[in-house]
Image 1 (cartoon, rainbow, N blue to C red):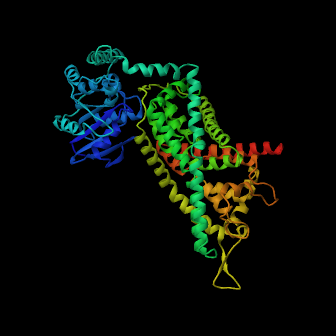
Image 2 (cartoon, rainbow, N blue to C red):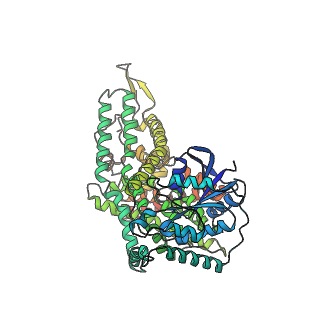
Image 3 (cartoon, rainbow, N blue to C red):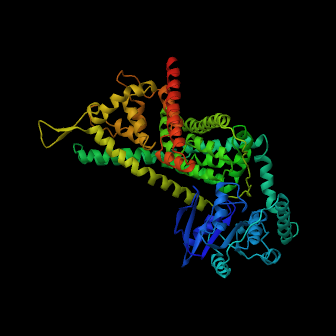
Length: 622
């Protein structure tokens, strides 16, 4: 790598990655740091390909206490990447704390410029930074940058190019006293630079809100209310959009099938692809709302407060409040959640968090839970379904916390967890940015799940229709096998004894097996299998919920009874069926044994618990 390298350094949520995207015009690649599982991004400066930009993991200090912070330290001081200049990114509303790294960079002899973000909030509160005074007091170079419109970008690039390239020197350890003295000095200088009487105005509103949201009693109540509203809104808000999407795909399937109902190709397009893919895409609005809710918690400043609220109960379970961030990320996707656990300083805590992250209700489970909850409350108010969805999230969290408690008792170590969480100012999210980010995350989900759904739609459709033979009366027409005589039916019936204790039959069992490729495939497989009656002819007139609510087993009994649906919900809540999570678990924990134990243990536990619940409920004929 060239010696003309600039590293971006700053605290988490300081606007560092936003600045990085502006500098590189989002033309970058992700690189794994040598000897570490932590990634960092590398790109070239837009308009000047000779200058390379590195976006390092967020850090509060150059004295590392976690994997992420260690990588930032090594990027600067190991010498392997040739860093010669640094852009220190500071949130203007938290500049007193973020400038601490500036003194550490100065001591190490590193050339740097300070990029001040969030200045719009200072201007809005009529306490803009007095840059001339600050430049004189700190002897640093400061540039204001607006992450929304890119204002200040050209000035920042000019300042960076002016910096003399220097090889980083030695950074001597700081005592606790030096940390305190330096922090006090920075705060004193910043306060002097502000207009008289304005020093605490910026924090007044935040402190007033925190009196309620961080209250020992009311804070916990607000936490459960806020999380419940977000999780329940997945059902409440999305219902009208889901109905519209469902009707669109149903209409499309009927329109295609009407072209030539006898054609295998037409049946494949209608009931193999449109019905299967539509059965999953109908739940995309719910996934978007989940991403929007989590994004709101993060950008508003509440996420760090939530970590503070749950710190004490998590300590009793062997974790800390810092674990809440990767665990909450697990509600979106387990893969980035495991990567987010890198900022945990305790190896024991990180190990436990990575083990229980697959128990969190990720976005891939939403289509499955929404379908099964829809069966429980079929033709009832969506309010009940919304509360049930919220209950599934809290129940999965409770199961994860129970597992954490047991693991913390099994794993013995003298190592203590460190909980250090910055509390940013409350701010209204930039809704345009928040919605755009949620759309991009939803599109990422569709791109990730789409190919697997398509592949299994093809495989399951072929398995459900073949073998085929020519009609005796008309050799031009191919006759497909009935469902129970098809390859798929024969395979399912051979495995049916495994699924009967769950209160299901082989058709549902096929969905459970296919879900190990991707959980969403469970929904599309049910849509395909139950859309084909025993005579082999597709039926596109009924919606999936209506079809499943009327489904019966060979004895004529309702297939999706309360007991069997609850059993399936429990199975999917506990089971680890995501191969991407399995692979990332190997990488993040440096252990195939760990990942295999996780895969086998969680799936075996899911089967035993769900069968036990189903059998118990059936004793009371529920």
